Length: 364
Image (cartoon, rainbow, N blue to C red; front, top):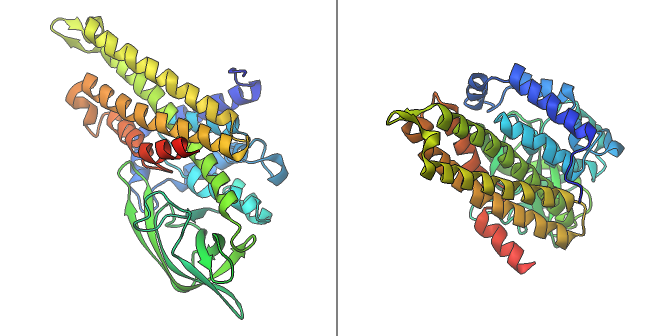
């Protein structure tokens, strides 16, 4: 396996890094994360103009990337900037489903940053299991109607449409439906997430919807989309860990205690060295998952689960270690580290936590 990024991916990473450095200050990110939408529309549009969304899609649907390493490159750099804009939640993952259900016009609008489509798979009491939705779809003379509830739909507030999983009476299995955000019978309860951003609980009552693909045949498509989304959050976590590492090393080099900088104490050096080793292991897991994204389903899912488990374990350890090395300042609102640590811990709970992926890996 060639571990070196291509020239195009290096240029993409450099472009994202410069955008974050010049146009994405932490203060603006924190303000956007606590706003009603949970992100900054202007920053989201700028990212679309720079081609960040296009890099997540194949050329066949109007993008210019779409491979596992393209996704990993983009989200690793976004993680370094703690970017809150929903490029994963309402662009890449939903766009992948739409691209494979012949909604190419909507995909084009997503790539251009003109539309956002939220994805609703999880229901109350189901934890991370999206394979058996209780939301029901019934066919009427004029189309389909949905009744049910979805929870933890990230950035659904303000989205143009929703993709919702449901069961139908006429076909076993999972079906997917596209619901306009303004559709009758749809209500939402929005709430702010711990790490900045927004999520919703969506209730549907005889809500008009459009069937995506064939009835009962959506499981493989959702599984593939979930693999891409999981790779994205793993890569984002790697970028977050990189920034935490840099902040911690800088703090150890400058903070003085007992007449000497902290970095000269051997016990603390060992703790930092262990952190760096763990981060390199996380990097290897992300590379392996990116390489296997297009592999056969079982092989792909094993690599994704291995990466997500590793990221969850290592991410929590890195966040805790960095805060201990910093002391109380590490969790103050004014200091950046605490915000990176919160995001890193919360990533463990997106698209399956450590226990979920360890079980899935052992059963595969």
